[in-house]
Length: 130
Image (cartoon, rainbow, N blue to C red):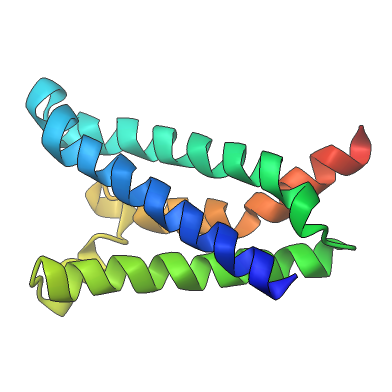
């Protein structure tokens, strides 16, 4: 289960990098930075839940505790990716990286991370109720 979880986590990371590139290269120019962040948040969340929907049966968690473990691994992968790109690719200072997680400044990264963490449990619940 861990290897499958990790591989889907890498897929999620790739998809979110593409989503972020579209936000910066296209949406910023079309609708401004603030609206682009909101659009990217919703498209990213939709992509995460779609990938969760199709891949969770393959990972095959037995219960909600397994789902929390899957969500935690995905969260660690995405946090690592965001911090790596922010610090070492874009050369942001630590306070700038931390600011990206502050929803009170219009940044939805922390909310997105929370929804990412919960996605396996929510999808598991929906699959179980069908």
